[in-house]
Each structure stands twice: as structure tokens, then as C-alpha cells.
Image 1 (cartoon, rainbow, N blue to C red):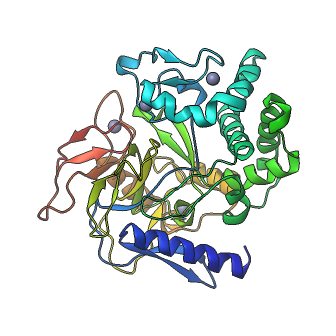
Image 2: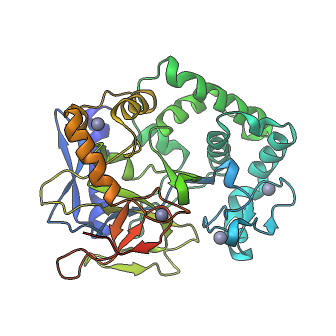
Length: 374
Ligand SMILES: [Zn+2]
Ligand SMILES: [Zn+2]
Ligand SMILES: [Zn+2]
Ligand SMILES: [Zn+2]
């Protein structure tokens, strides 16, 4: 991105971090570009930053059992009984959640999903991304903006993709999914909601490397959440010191570093998400999370990063020898959720502020807690 755009983005993200009392700050360097660094010592389990996704949509396979607004899962793997009777795709946990989504769903999005569903298109490989694209188009048509930060007036909408997100170099590996997604979404949209394919393809190209997978027990994909505020500035390491917490939250950081329930004036019913410290992080260290699955081996991680994010990973873990890699993998496994019906998420300390020593861990995929064995 251009120097002026990077400086403006760094400024707005610094403001957003300060407003929520986050223990980190934006640093801009000639060589590395933008990154987020600890402004004080951070303890494992502390919330590092919170943000509301600009676009939050359920994954196709989970749409019947996950509330499209708050992502609450129906008990015992049942389907939610409250389902949109027009498109038949979107479900809610409550009439409150239905009302929140009505603003963006009840017009073009519902019509587009009906068309797409009726035509049997959900079978395409990129169905989850198509749901995101249809939501993006509906938000653009309606001029809907999201307030991504709890204590800041900043807004993000469709245009934020162009203004705030840098594009990865698209090559043949990433071009096809994006073009197919754009075509499917535009075909389904009512005419009034269509835009030039090139504009949508550009937005999706920026979007796809800034979308976080919300993951449930046993690594099941629950929803896609794209962030155009500051979550995009956290850089990658295969040996992360922060984790994306798949549990939506309505609590956010206060300026004193504690979390507080959002007051009604600041909450429009949409959930926030948080990044949580996985390890203790010394002041001045960069906060890094893993764009690839930390349980994957080096080859798989590197090809994921190459194909979806357009870079060759040269993090310390990727550069180390096989013995050290096995060691790192074993250490990560010690923090893996021990429950049979999950087993996929890593654990973060439940109570970071309490006296030193290991406390209970909480799984970032299923929210269960356990006492680690040391
Ligand atoms: Zn709900
Ligand atoms: Zn509908
Ligand atoms: Zn790596
Ligand atoms: Zn779990």
C-alpha cells in the first residue's frame, strides 16, 4: 500500500487500540510494514484487542444449527426452529437476533439466497465465501456501516475493503475461487444490488486474506468473519503468541485493561471477537498469530500460506530443523483441548491476572475448561 495510506491506517488503528485500552500499539517499519507490538508485558490469557467483524456470515454446513446473528449453537446439534421462511437458509436462536439481522437480511440478501438455494448452487466449493460476498453486496446496496470498535466512532463498510486492506498478488491459485465466488454472488443478487464484477473481484481479493474462520468443536467451521478494522494488522507466525478466540463476546476492554459488558448504547446486537495472548509476551515483542493451522506440518502450513496469503513463510519455526519442529509440535499438543467431542482448539488461561503458575485452560474452539497436567 502507499505510504500515505499506510500512515492513515496506522493512525486510525492506534486510536482504536488506545480507545479500548489495549496493551499493544501499531508500529510501522520500512522493512516489515505495519505490525502490532506489546506496549507492556502481557500475560497469557489476557485479551489483546477486540473488534466486530464487518461481515459475519454462517458457514453453509452450519447455517441450520448456528444463529446467523450471535453464532449461538443449537443444543445437542439440533437445528434452530426459527428459520427464515423465505430463503430457508438463515436461522436464529431468538426473535431478538432475528430483529438485529432483519436490517441487512430481509431485502436483497434474502432474495439472493432464495435464488441461489433454489438453483442448487450451494454445492459449489466456495459456498461459504459466496455467503460473505452476498452479504457484502447487500451492505453496499443499503449503505450499511459497522462500528468495529466498542469505544470509537470509526466505521467500516464495503468501501473499507478498497481503502483499508492491501491486496495480495493474485495468481492462478487464488484467481479462480475469487472469480467463481464473484460470479455466483452477482448472478444470485437482484439486479439493483449488482456491481461491476471487477469491483467485487478486487474487494474479494483483499477480503480473502483478512477473513478469520470461526471454528467450533472438532475444528468444524462455524462462520466466516472478515475484519477491516485492526485485526488485519497482526502478522503471521507458525509459532503464535496470540490466538483468535472463536467464542463471540459482547464484552470488551476498558481503558483500565479489564473487560466490561458492552452497554446497550454501544452494542447493536452484533458480537465482537477477541484476540487473546497464548503465551506471556514481553513488552516490545510483536504480537503474532498463525494464519495456518498450528497442528499442520511444515509443508502443509507453507502451501496454505502460499496459496491463500501469497507469501513464503520464513518464521523461526519454518526455518528450524525437524527435531525442533517435532519439539514445538509436542509443546502445542500439551495445550490442545482434551475433550473427545472437540480436541481441536488450543487452551488459553482462564484467569491471567491471578498469581503466577498454571491455572485452568479454556479451549478457543469449544469454550470448555480443563486443568492442565504439568
Ligand atoms: Zn442469536
Ligand atoms: Zn431469508
Ligand atoms: Zn512459518
Ligand atoms: Zn475444545
